[in-house]
Length: 483
Ligand SMILES: *[C@@H]1O[C@H](CO)[C@@H](O)[C@H](O)[C@H]1NC(C)=O
Ligand SMILES: *[C@@H]1O[C@H](CO)[C@@H](O)[C@H](O)[C@H]1NC(C)=O
Image (tube, rainbow, N blue to C red; front, side):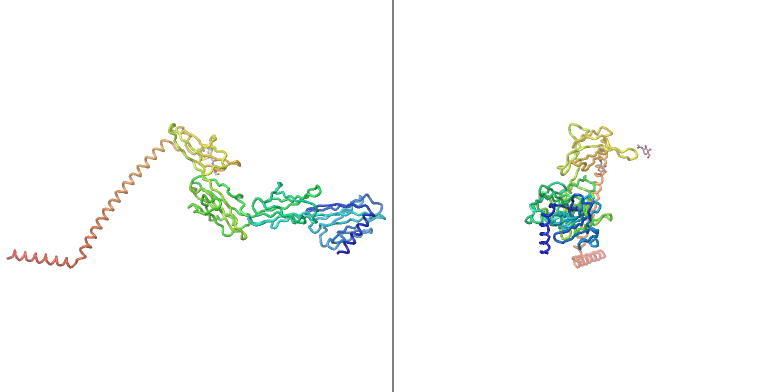
């Protein structure tokens, strides 16, 4: 190797003085096409001889004056499927540029182009630098270590590296590890959702910006995509607590827990609600570990955690169930009207409330009346058209979060039903008490009888004696009468 390099160096130095020469730098991202320029003033009438060579591997391609072409062994069309091309159509214009398709890291290096025609020799030296972003794992699991490195081969002296993620500057949490400014500038992070996206390494070099990109996807729970996502449900309704893993990901030992309040930093599992169900539906994919609550109660609000193990890595997602209910009160100064208030166990993300009256026509088609803004609404029960269903819709900054409904009943029917209900109950209670007393009396009597019999049986001999004595006495009396 050494003698060849030395030879090239000597040759270049020699030719530098003999012919016109300049040093050019070309940057190409791995996988793209690189064009290594080699241009001079038009050369006819002569047919030139062209030689493209690389400092470390020798001949790339050459063409003799006769028209015969040769490829270097590693560049042979048989081996590389014509990765290189020197378009003949441009020769007339004095353009002998070399095109390299699908460049690789090992293509980086110093090339020279030598054009010989007549007694003139033109030499160009081109440095090709390949930029590349490589990721330790293209689809790392949430929580695992991932490193993203920026390579430029050969490394341009004095260059510095910046990173952008989805086109905005990325500030690494652990700092950019720079390997002495030679070949590697890497970001090492714990994989989380914030690392997902398009990574671009920007190399600042001689006032130019060179770029290379790679896409990164972090495997884990994709829905909900963030921890502490709020799930809204109305009291008494059913709700799904989502927990969907990346497609094709099947977590082992999936677990659902309800976290006890007050343990923000070290969550402790508590009891799951009674209507909680994590059993899968047939339609559900193995990557979907969503659970449901059949009937949400006010006490079910709070934080829930879904977790599973992926490739030995524990992946968890916390979420918060927010329960909505309507509080109704009758203001003392305004009889015949009802005040409805929309209440949420956590309203920190709610920006707006609105109330609508839901109406049904004879066909059962639903329509909503006019919208009233605000958390509280005052409804006159005297007015017929206010009876029926009222819904409170609540909104966050990104749109509707949910709704909760309440029924206002006709005043007369409401009170009537109540009293009927009460009298029914009273009659039932009285009847039941009576039965109970009778039963108790019967039981008491039975017990008494039983006790008495037991007492007699305890002394059977005594009974016989008594019996005999009384019989003797009777006989004696009878005899007395006879006498
Ligand atoms: C109910 O449905 C029938 C037929 O579908 C239609 O002709 C009628 O107009 C509907 N009535 C109302 C009040 O929407
Ligand atoms: C309340 O939410 C349910 C479910 O999202 C929806 O079907 C219904 O139309 C909503 N009701 C109102 C009055 O907005």
